[in-house]
Length: 343
Image 1 (cartoon, helix red, strand yellow):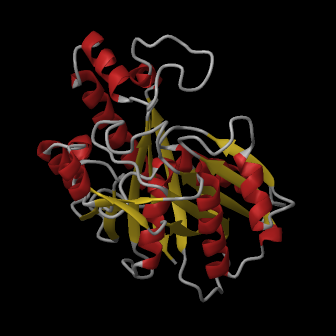
Image 2 (cartoon, rainbow, N blue to C red):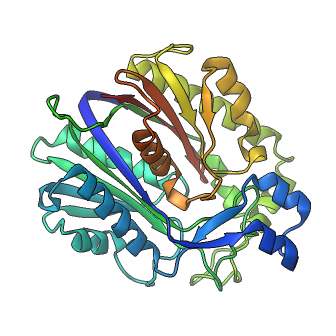
Image 3 (spheres, rainbow, N blue to C red):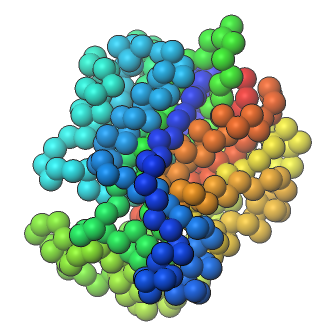
């Protein structure tokens, strides 16, 4: 997605105060030493409020920091990975109402762990297509708790942390004195045949959790890999997708592999063996600092990329004119890449 006019982006993350720690899981027998070592973290945030409320808190944080009136927002795009607190309900409308964006169009965007990036893409499309839309708010919010979900053992290579994330996207005003990021490109690559990895041999069900609780992501993945000859084909597809998405995003942002203006690249907040296919590629094409920010957060459902943008935007990593690359992805599978520049 080549962005034809400058769009500014400010992002925020809301992490609850509660924590669950690897040491406690080791002591209770909930994790083995080998499993703990692969995760590459010591603790994850745990919330006592549902995901949409976490999204609202992140949104309020970014709107306050930007001193931006919610009445000026034309679109609220909310994404999530897991249960939002009600079975038959519209979380995006809740977020819009709670933040005061009463004139905005609320929409929900689902794309597994890539959902926050997909929602960002919808926001960009709307801003570029409709001059009457002044700004868009993108949010994610998830809470991964029993009885439906065991954040520690549900999946391979990921511990799921509770969090809200938000990004305010609008047309850039060159005379602003606020430090903002300019979104220069946003690209996607999909291999839809891998949707079956999250389905395995399980039949379609009539209602949530009929296949069993807590959710076991490992079971369908294991079944899929048994039927398709292991991880080899998927890893090959993933490497090709990450490469093509990254190269396209660099080209559309006006940069190139090895560009000295690129200061860092941020990865999804997953375990090392999940990201192994990415490291060699990044060393080859970029050779810059790799930000792995899972420590203290774990995998934030649909919110990893927005949380990584929030970190880059507030950590003063970039000087004016410098770039950062942020990689995303989610089951299905879709991979994504955003390139941002410090204004």
